[in-house]
Length: 269
Image (cartoon, rainbow, N blue to C red; front, side):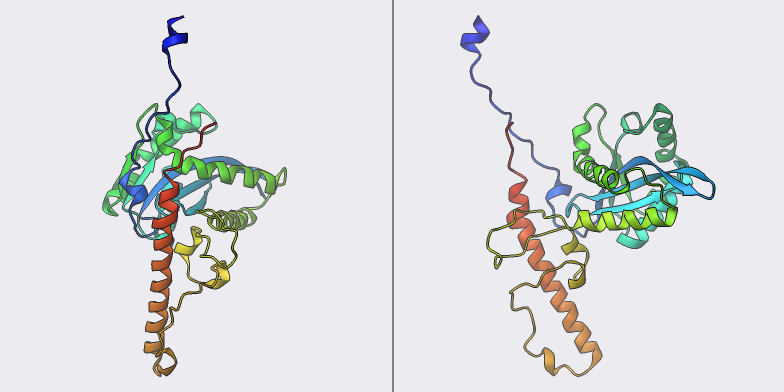
């Protein structure tokens, strides 16, 4: 009876401030979340073998990078991390689940992952590369929500694409990179009704300035009026670099003015 008359209406608790790594402008993939997902069966000669996916998520631009690993050994993970560093640059920080919370297919896989992340070679490589590796607090899985969200995008995409088909290693690697490109082209901000309005920001805008990978033209006057009078190739390259920098600055402006503002919204169900 007291609860009925004195309880009052439900009040949603105030949202805690987002971590600095989520709201600070930085080079893509400087700070990342790391997760594993799988397994995926592939054809290998006259048998099938298991493959896993190592998923890197940029905390700032929400971009995705996928690497396929053949097993859950520390050696395979190191190779995947080295490929990631060579492609996207060495990150300053990596966040991942604790071994006891790593959501994989079985307890056996969890114990293997525990050995991987605490392996001496892995820790030495991270230390020598200047990578600060941290783990989310136990029993607080929501702290890894920023990369679990992308795991939730990759899984159904692969499930709907592959269905019950068995691919080879090369075919699976190709599919994974295509899935990566598709997810990186998703909008980060609301899509406006006006087709002539400012661009719809996507993670791929920060990864490439090549219009052939989905970067639309912008109605900004970003070209130097003296561009056509440049005679040497070095001057032309410099002008192209400046153009790319102006494009990138416009993307960061949209990121600050639209994307960060949207992070404050909370949906009530």
